[in-house]
Image 1 (cartoon, rainbow, N blue to C red):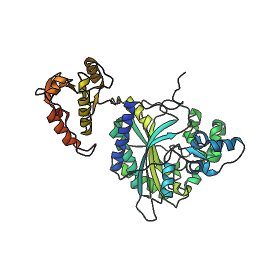
Image 2 (cartoon, helix red, strand yellow):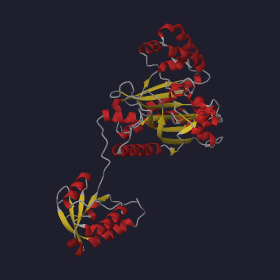
Image 3 (cartoon, rainbow, N blue to C red):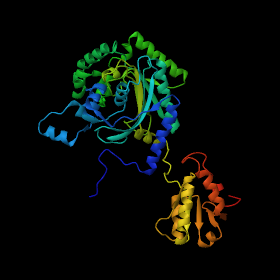
Image 4 (cartoon, rainbow, N blue to C red):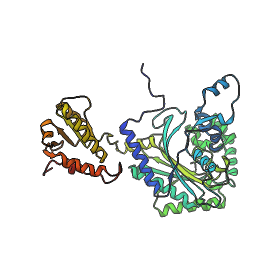
Length: 458
């Protein structure tokens, strides 16, 4: 039996890989307009970072993290020996904790400095049960803003997220933005205790997992997918009834800025997101149709205590992450498909082997000038070369024959109109040399029609 991709993973074949690159580029363009700069962090970190940052009571930490261990340390564990904390590593289940760790480690927000705005894109890893829209290796794009407390920042990142979804083509009518406030360290403890007391009153109606959560972090019970638990928690006390004056004022301001920007949202007092580090504003974007129960395509919130949790000075923070695979499903549900990855501007066909050297040279000159070209490398017949050119989607075929080369000419055929013309090789070389003298990949790129013309009436 041939080897397959590991369970819960998938290969990105060329069409999708090309779309993923365009997806990331769109994010860089949209987020860049708001001042966000790229950052790359390791795909694995010390396990302690996620335990302290995300929360030990979360499913992510308690159930889903992949441990990364060297062969030498594995031998020690099997032998009953302990290994140092810095050797206890885990593949990153999300991106925020690693970015905040990097900000703290490199002091990117010195005392009194302007906020730092960062964006990332790449794979994350969770040992979940694979299902539609949920993989064990999946891709996220996210942003983090550290050092800004004002509610304008909260509104800005939410608006930016919605602008991105519009830019990649997800219809506004198919999305729903949920909004809530989680309170702060002053008002949330009292609310957490009230929820715990409520859960204890309904212990017989809640699952064992919810009651386990009640002892560690009762707010996690709002995430339970058990229908009976959801029904019970629907009647639980609402966080908005327990917010302190500062949190009420902050939340009201966020909503006012969203209203001013004509961003529609639904207040959901049960929205707590899945990670323990959130404070105050939390939000989530869901797709109304096409994804079933796994309908969240992005979300985030404020995490004003996370920098301290990972050893830094008090630094406010805010961010979001969006799931690439979920977005793809949302786009497909909206009827958007991947564009074919293959693109071929022109194909050089050789009548016989005597013209191969000239064909190879012409092809390289055209590529250096920014034109996408191909040729046959397997000695096919001229007829088979035309079939290959058609399969590649070539718009022009340049035919090099020994007689035409002797006259300094080459034949150019438009594959759409079937028009043909003899073109002077020296003129083409001169034009390509001019554009090829520019920095590789620079602009402008010559138009295919001016390099390989086929006459009037195209």
